[in-house]
Every structure is written in structure tokens, then in C-alpha cells.
Image (cartoon, rainbow, N blue to C red):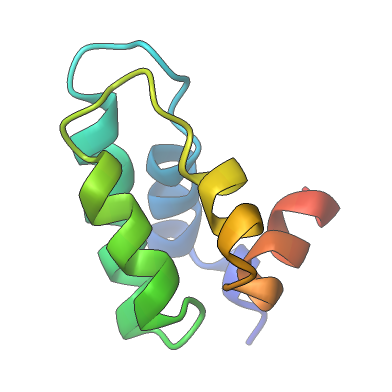
Amino acid sequence: MDPESDAEWRAQWALVTTPLGEEWSGRARYAAAMYFYKKGEMSAEALEVYRLCSRLDNEDPLPIIRQRGIGKGWLERFDQA
């Protein structure tokens, strides 16, 4: 089964891509990142970046992940979206 056809996967994707600056958006992105981590789609190092950014609604975790050179597969998923 293609994960993107799963309703839960799509709901979590919507959360992990919550626009920056919305109230509680950092926490929403982190909660969704935990889902993808548990599914094996995100590394522990990338998840840690989401955790660090969770209280910073305006902070985009993706540039930090790129800067650290971690989460290559995760970044590729964003580049495809």
C-alpha cells in the first residue's frame, strides 16, 4: 500500500507542513514528525531538530536539517511534494 494513499498519513503530512508562524504550528509539526519517525520515514537526528523547533512557531526545521547534513530521505520527500 502506498503510504500517501492512507488517510492518517495524509493528515500527518498536512500537520508536518503546517505553515510557519501559525500559533502552535511548531508543536503540530513536531507531533507529526514523531508519527513519521515511528513509521521509519525520518531519522532520530531529524526528529530532534523538530523537537528543538517545537516551541518556535516561526522556525523552519528543514534548513537546519539540511545544514546538519541529516535526514536526506526526509528532505527528498519534501523536494518531491
